[in-house]
Length: 140
Image (cartoon, rainbow, N blue to C red; front, side, top):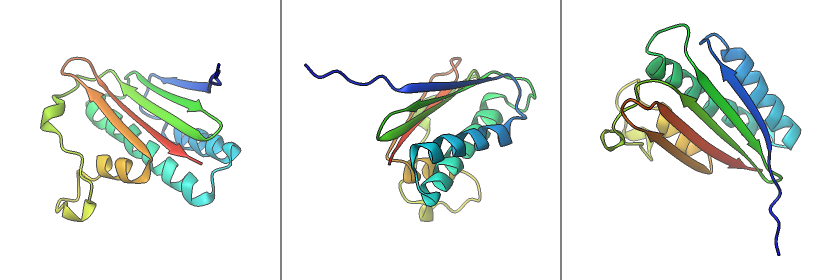
């Protein structure tokens, strides 16, 4: 019988949009302790930054007070992060996550593509009226 090790869980429940630096520092601290190299730490921090900014911009809709949950699951060989907002959500059928950022001609709309390209696993769930959750993993 194989018993899977339960990951360590760190949860940040935020009720304001002003914790950008704290979220970045926590991401870097966790990744460094896990043994990720400097380039991987940079990539992880960038992905968390993008997801956090999207949650604020689209989920909080410009309000300074909103509920966000950032969850870090720490495994022996990977870091799994989810960022959940309580915004109005959207129809997933109307969003395309690009595989190649060179095809984007706008200065906006690169965040989801960056998240997908810089992680090993990426998913997003959203429904109108139910908020959005972005989830990704990076292996050491």
